[in-house]
Image (cartoon, rainbow, N blue to C red; front, side, top):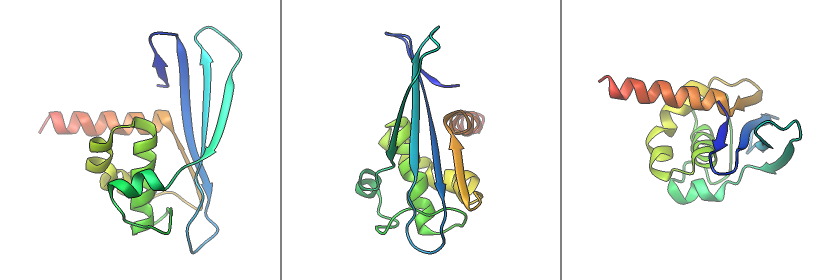
Length: 132
């Protein structure tokens, strides 16, 4: 379920993690693993999920990210993750509240969400909308 670039055979997969230390904004770390199809060698890139791109779309929580509740920080986290993974602004805005309810609000103190989980969720939501 990882993303694969058809032109160069590059396979990428992201994961989003964080440790909730309590009140206040939290840091979400993105880890992107990429490798060429058929290769055992992988590159790992790690970065902090940026807040600013998601704030430009919808400002739920200018203070930052949060998870494990239905609050505004969780909505900002959901929007930022969808935007980072898909790059699709319209899709991210349209689905982030539902994504929050299903995957961000239900996270425990330790946030761990992988790309395959998100892509499966997106597929289920897409199928649900198609069947309505």
